[in-house]
View 1 (cartoon, helix red, strand yellow):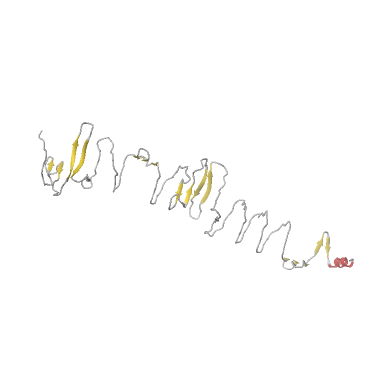
View 2 (cartoon, helix red, strand yellow):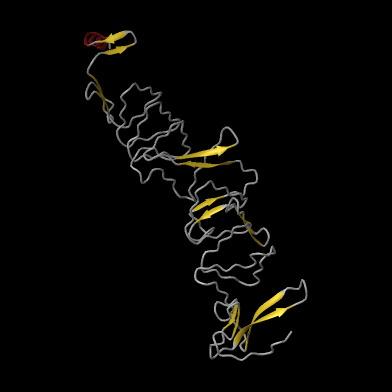
Length: 309
């Protein structure tokens, strides 16, 4: 068979091979670029050693472009059953459509084609918004199992600590229909669990500070420090005070009152003037009848009592 060592041509179809020559050829070499100094080299090798296609040029670095025509698709290794190896950084400016599973470094990042299940072995950093339309489970024993904020785990706006090795309690947030409120509740494998809400340092815990509705305490409430109320306090059941209580204003009691001892530094008046005690002198005025034991002290027997003195 004859060999061709070199062909010199300036034609757009410097080489055209096909049934109709330069008309719709199966292979064509375009030599029409006047400054052309690049080309493609095909290297054959021994059996099982493959073949090579490479750019040749008088320059050091050259690109290689492979194009279909119009909206046609470029298919790489469409008939062979081996893998495709991308040995360098690869940039995709359009959509990367993968019909099979995806695996990076075997198991560091995997996507199952059948289900879309994705496993990330390292840190998942998302710079934009993320929308999750199904249940999400995060398994972590980190003190920053979930940290949300402009600086990530540094001073986050929300943090979930999963570092307690025996952890079996948590917090459930339940959303409801409009005007039905939302719920925070402890979840646990146990029957009874406490919920602790803390500020930091000497900070104050504020409940319903921006809402205008009331605060309902539906169970017995213990206050170990000072309870200060700047507004009205209404108790619909028994209010038990086991220590001293100071009332700076008027104490209005509409029901019966049982007092073990009374220490009053000001005047006492019952129904304005029916029974009065002047704090300065102790003078007592009783507008009605005074009964001592079984004896009613009237004006007549009081005069008789004074006559005996």
